[in-house]
Length: 205
Image 1: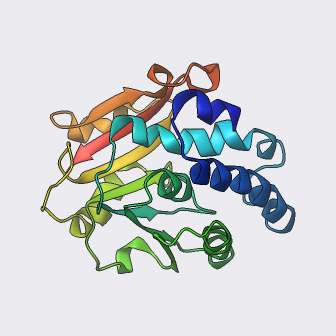
Image 2: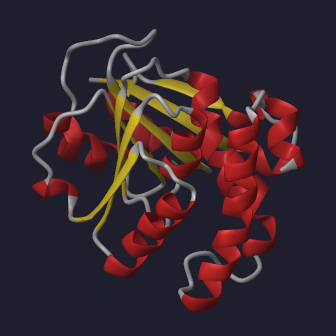
């Protein structure tokens, strides 16, 4: 957890939850291949801290509701739920075994602000303040699918919308939103070369 503590001021409980997550994910990964074998050794940097980059762009106010689309084993939803215990997170994935991992880890971490469902985003009717995801699908496709899920009662520093983690060449994905999109390089926050060419992308809806 040393990398995370360099960039975030965490309570004792939050530190305990993140330490437990660092233990639980490798245990689950032995049973279900959520994360590549070589990548699991870099869980803190590549998954936990990467997820928390969203918090550097927007500090969610108490009561904010967030939908994590294609969460897999719980990224970015679970690290964000640890950081923002006063916000409500709904994690969805179409693959049952992955959502069971997210559900179990949320339970073991005592994250009462997390609910997990096996479903497709097309079938989600509920509305939220923000939708987050991590490289699940092209940004224009995601925005088209979740526009119905973002309501317009704003109570954060930024209007409600979509916040995604992306890497590599993103120009074609952001082009349709060039008048409103905000692209923030993650290396602006975290001084590790792994974050070069990785971005937090925000589209207000």
